[in-house]
Length: 588
Image (cartoon, rainbow, N blue to C red):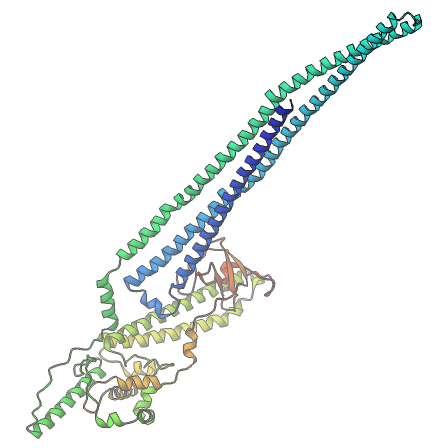
């Protein structure tokens, strides 16, 4: 019995070690998946940072570069890489929720179930051992009583055979023998009952209780094995689910690469840099054998230069100028003349003062771009007209928003004073009128360049703030500085003039602004279509962040995410400012 009980105990010890090893394997796999999710998150973060690093900065020259198909394809690649990084974040999230989280809960349940099964096994083992000890005690008691009964019977027979013993002693010995025989019979009956009970308990222990416990442990272990197999399948399935989207990202990158048009990019370069000048004519033969002919040749060449400048003055194409890439040598006088002296002469001469005054702030050139070649000037003027039209539209949107706010105040006086917005409305009206006058001025210059108007009238010149005489002298003086004494076209003097014009704080307005901090949140009361520059579209009920409150112009600056921000009418949103800022306020 002892050997069989010891064997059963050994089996429990073996099973306990094996099931603990299975739990360790499961925890190791959980740790593996967790580290994989951390790698995916780190990889996605690095991809996003990489994509953000090479994104074009706002209000920079890089934005102009993205008109070419090759740079647009690169921008598309950056955007697709951002989506590609998002799929790795999806992998991390799904693995965390479907594998790591689920297996962690399952391990805790498995440990509790394992503990319960081995507790039942130990309890059954202790019970059978207790029954065995009771059987051994009953058996020893029966053996002892039988030996005592034999000794009492032998003593009685000895006393009965001895003639010297009295009858009373013999009777006493006989009664003692009978008592011992009775005790032996009782012990025999008890031993028999205990043995029968033990055999029944032992049968149940080895054929019912222990097999059931082993079966439960086996089922528990099999469920663990199945569960880890399912987790491995999920591990692969999570990756497989994002493969179509990743493939789509790669397809878009391929599509963007295939959209690159080298002919189109070359044409854009041509359009961007073509000057509009005609190729130079044939150079006249100069016969140095006859001094008179040489003089006539030089004067005729100078006249041709003058004719070219005259044509430029009246808006026509410059036929007399040499091709801009061809430069004649300067005279010895110009070569030896110091740069500082030439600049001082430029600053003190009256015609050139007009040229200097016609420069825009920051030394960017004349306001009408007359220093540029015809084609470049046309593009600059068209760009300026478009910018002014956008500014007009923005001012009109502000005026419309204030008008709506005023109507609300008129209908609901308790919400605000309608007269408080009249001053701002008047300012907006004046700004719009000024911008329209600017548009007319630049459209007039644009029409001259395109040949739609023969020449501006005196009234138009006065309206633009620059008389034709001053403009002509400024253009001529600037043009003369770009020509050498022999009439050849040069660029050095123009470049020197632009280099010497002092820069102002005007350029500081175009520096990149730091992102404004969030000062509260807002809820869109109505849908707003932000179709103009600087505005942002919002949907009714949408929650957004406030980064700049209304400063009296009827507009609130909001942010949707890191890359999307703009202005919306204050009357269209309900604003909840941070308590640390100015307390909760509501604009309706």
